[in-house]
Every structure is written in structure tokens, then in C-alpha cells.
Image (cartoon, rainbow over all chains, first blue to last red; front, side, top):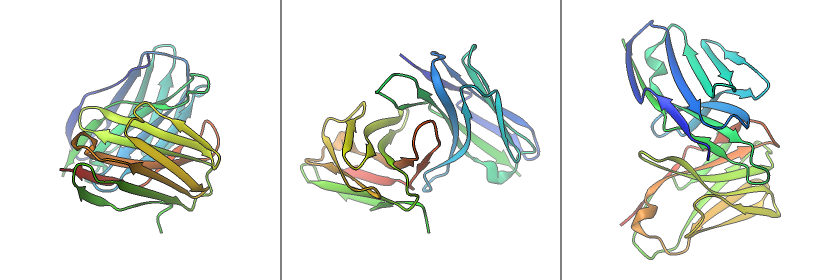
Length: 114
Length: 112
């Protein structure tokens, strides 16, 4: 059974710091991995999607990497800003035949302090 | 305007009441999903639909039903609400396979 773990559960950093959020999964048979941001009252926003054949994706100050063999993904945020404060979730698209679904981590709550 | 909308945004109801949550999308996506989010449990899939004639149960479908009235509309019903259905409910859309899912703003449901 696929399990997705995100460490740390919470993180507080000063503005301007570069930081790394971690996501690990137990079954490497995935189609892709997606990183989301969740803001209170605003639902989830897709940040980056990495297909199983890819090693990384970049969008602005965000860079996500994927190492299927070790069951790990990282989300790197450069030059963090207070507006980056949110909960970051990762989800893997499980390769399970007709029973397709995303398996979610519990998220990392990030606070960037001015 | 938002691409994926959910109504209502907040709802308080009593045990035993029938509740319908609605989701509409203007993205033209074929796939739609309903999730619930509970503190400490992450998101769990309730139902999903790959097109208008396709409805599939997710991991926690008991106590829920859905209707895909059109490609753009996917409704979730609680026939007889119970307190442990108090949660944040999200609708999501996806175009085809292997692509991003896009989420609505969520509906916060409280069952007293």
C-alpha cells in the first residue's frame, strides 16, 4: 500500500532563506508526483507536476525533483518571501490499473517571517 | 472568474438532513473528483468521474452519492448527514490522464 510522508510537518524560516521541503513515498510504481499549495479558505493550487520519467521541474523560484528509485521528491523554494507562507502538499498518482487515484501526504506548514 | 467553483462555501446542518454540494467547472476537463480533508488524515477520495456516463467509488464512498449532470457539473450528496461527515470538501478537475488536477476553493461542512 502506497504511503506518502512529508517532513517536516511545520517549518518557520526568516525571509530570504532558501529552503527544502521533503516528500517520500513507499511504492515507486507511480505515474507522476504533484506539489500543491494550500492557503486557508482558498483551496489547493497546483505548483508543479513531475512525470515519472522526469527528474525535475522548475517554475519561477520553485524547483521540484523526483528520484523514483529512492522514493523521494523535494520542493526547493529560493529566496523565500512572507507570501510563500502556506501548507505545501505532495501527492503521487498511483499506478494501480483502473483504480487510479492520488495518494496524499499530510503537508508541511511553512511560515516565512518578515 | 474561478475555473472551478463550489457552492455553498460553508454549510452548517443537523444530523439526518440531506445535503447537496455542487461543483462547476469552466476548464472543459473531462474528469472530476470529490475529496474530503480532515485534520491529520490528509485528503481522501470520495468519488470520481471520467466522463458524464462514468461514476466510480473512491476510498470512502459510504454515506455519499454523486451525480454528473453534465461535463461541467458534478454534485455530491449526503443522504442523511452524520457528525463524522464534518470536514472540508474539495472538488477537482483533470483533463485526461497523467495531468494536473485543479481544485475548487472548498466547502466547509459542519454536521451538528
